[in-house]
Image (tube, rainbow over all chains, first blue to last red; front, top):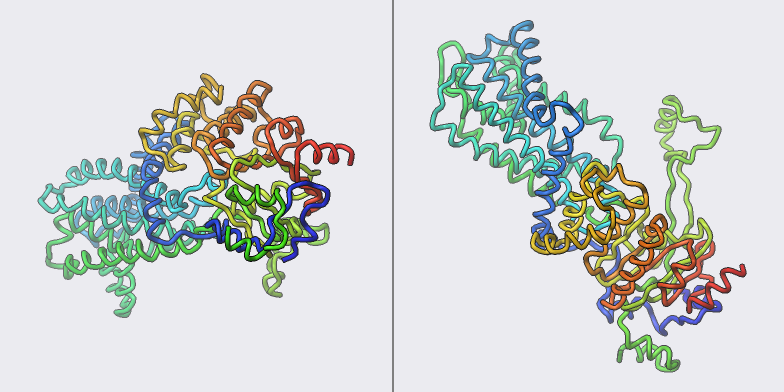
Length: 312
Length: 268
């Protein structure tokens, strides 16, 4: 404590006598850098639900406002991606023999993976690209990564509507399993929220991530069996058991398989020559695990650094 | 105040008693701020890939890093209803001090205690430049924790106060710096803050807006908030503040009545 040499040198506002720390304690003042406990934090976050919703909607509106086709890109981007992969992997490289309805198989995988991919990418930018907002106003920072995930969710609703039109065109008949699609999406959304929160903290502290993430994402895409059937590929390659275990436990694979199992009848039903069908009960359990695990761990990890966002 | 008088029973001047009756909102206790600046590369350390690779091999930190001791031991207490002007030359630590009070810079030594969460209004604090003014108003209000009903009732007032007119329907990146500053101030001041830190944010506004914002600051003081104001325009400080702190190279040179401090500052 060295008040005497810093205080009043010619001015007229004296410091109160005694320890300033005690004065602060007496009046219930808190250190400027302090993180709220997780309970009050969740409450604050709930109070900001309108912010999260409005922010997501606004970003979706402004995102395509410069382009001529505007909101059409929400539908066109996933469609174009699916078309390219269909030509590359389905026709030219010939993975088509692995599965029955390859078009439905590929497009479902593409849409589901894109949702997680974009949530993770958005999360990594959520803090870094909103520094001025963070510095100007006080609000629980988790609102930002959550808003980014919600933005992707709104986009996904459009993609799913497209998917529901395309899948019957490829020859599938709608079944009662389709009613479970919202449940699968809800689980995936919980996972994406957790992953987005975790990536937001990583992206806020480690700027190198934005350079690295595209490569990680591409590796993840290839490892998730978006355009090939993992079991039949591994069988051809004579891969050991644990490799297929890891690949099938991969959250992206889990959510993709879940959606395929619901939408594509031939994916679910055993067929001669295609090997055993995926175990849907196991996939549901994996999906549930990933949703809870990612959300709890991701939220906790993000909250741990709450007071450090926007510094520097 | 029993606890306090126990600590210092000897020197209870009338002024101290007066101060003790008012509740403090910000206490800065022997604050030191040292921050690291990246990217201050010298001529010798060219930023190519080979040198970056060698640096990682040798396990050195980023060479462009420099430590700046910006605040060197500052203590003061601010009370409810204070409007405190901070003056000093460029680089004397004014903005750093505000950011430390806002909790954006961790103290190297000492501590900052605040009542509630301070809000910092800086000159470059574009909210969301791609979104329209309307969206910025709504989002800003929601971010401050307002309910939809509160936003609805405040919206017109905010837009009117900012005076940006029809520009409210255009993206904020199309605004002039003065218009942006006006809208930001209008949004931030729509809610009563315990502690509002204004860093040159009013500098770009025109004459009429300066008058309006001074009124608003006075009103916030009445609502028992504390306002900190950094400005190079000394008239603004003299008209709005009841106390001025003069910083020089990270230390308080003078702290007290605006007239006395500004007079001394002008002479220096």
